[in-house]
Image 1 (cartoon, rainbow, N blue to C red):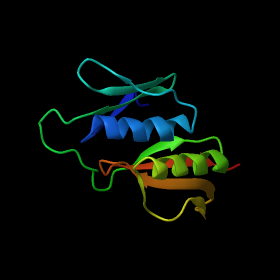
Image 2: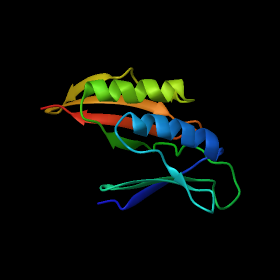
Image 3: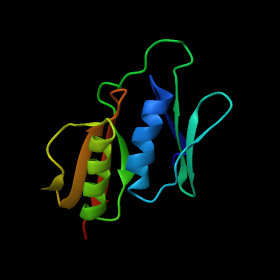
Image 4: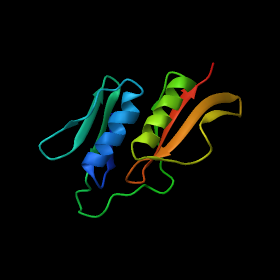
Length: 126
């Protein structure tokens, strides 16, 4: 459904360090910086990218917005979360763990990146 996602970043270097760590924990190679100073993480599923806002205003988390990343299981999700905390992220929402309701069971872990964007690791349990 999605071709790419781009998030605003106040510090490309700080955000790249954070996303290299959290995405590296789920098997994504480090991002590459293009001549315009944007960072791109390219996979067969799509592209995740970071950029300073083109309007010159500060980047910030969208109120009510979350970007979710698929993980292979709770262990990978926990590693993703730990990598984020160790590289400038902050935990948010409930602690990482299993959630059940409405006939589903998922593992979720939430972080805010260095610019305040909310991201999530998700694994659908069988």
